[in-house]
Picture 1 (tube, rainbow, N blue to C red):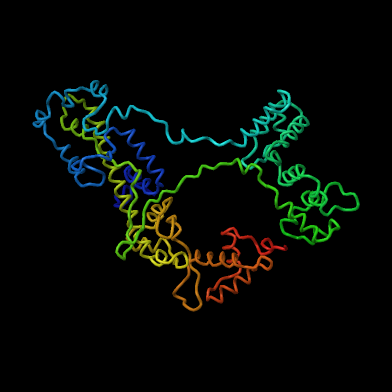
Picture 2 (tube, rainbow, N blue to C red):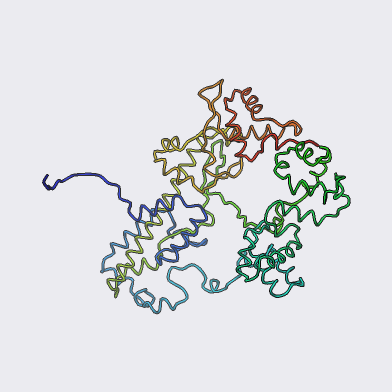
Length: 499
């Protein structure tokens, strides 16, 4: 075996930084894109946001004039430097004068207005009282000692958003340097606070705490046993038969407690009125309004896709720096290299945003073409669709379609939908084998069947299968169970009502 040199020719795809940037921008959501563009505006001095009152002759994002001006800037000869010289020219100002000035050449914004700072909307909104603040306020008014209050603050700090204590008392006692019995006594005191049930370690304890706040009369006398069982029938069910209650095995509960099924039904009424998540009224999630990336509207009988660029900064290359680069006087090599690098970065981000917009519109137009019946009539007419079909339609790779449809929303007359919503599998029909139904449409049919069923005799999965097959939809029982679970519909036994 000997060593030798071979010359081979091969093709390889190299991911340049510019290509990686374009791919990254393609899959960003609207909020992430806005943050990314703002970051580029801060880091690249050659990038500038076009103001709303920009003159018509100035360059904006996506115009061909931008690239022409950049090329002209790069090819300016030294003989033109004298034309730009003057008392207000950039090279005469100097860097110190430029950064000390309140306004740059080419700026359109009033500097006086920029100096005024107003509080943001978030700063003017009243903050709602949290569960922790509500409990700490009650703890401060309690008669506990300073040591017990410190333990109480640790307990309150370890409650989750539902009001449950998810940390063991042994850990809290170890951190506080006290015995577990002392921490248990403080916990019992916290469990007397409002809302009722707060500080419980599981659902059973939470419900029992709430029952302790209820009057014994008449609720405590419901179904009370004659053998002197401590507490009421409601407490007995919560303490020992929550699993059977969840599955609605009322007969088994009645037999175990020696009462009638009717008494169990009455006790169940009381349990249904309890709150399994006592911290729910104080939980405030930050719900942000979804802003669509594209609009689909009907204009003169045709569906039109409109890009929503409201709220996104419109970028251009700063006119001041274009003049500065054109002059090229008294600039060091390091300064020239820095500005050329930033110019290339500005050009790439502008082109990447333009390409992102074009690709998004092409993908949505293809979706509208495949799902036109949905936009006309609703979810019942949604067709099966996969990424490959759209990729072949517009001549792109499936991975590109996947990136475009990620974290983006569409608004149409039917409502607001994520682009991923339009891609789903199909269910075969017995009458028309070539015409398949969307799985989303079948799930909607199941939801409507359950909504219209008799609560005392709910539909079983096999009965739903029979009804779907009567509509020429071939589906298995396990598939019905899967779709039912996806739309959060419980089983027939859990949906059954006895009263």
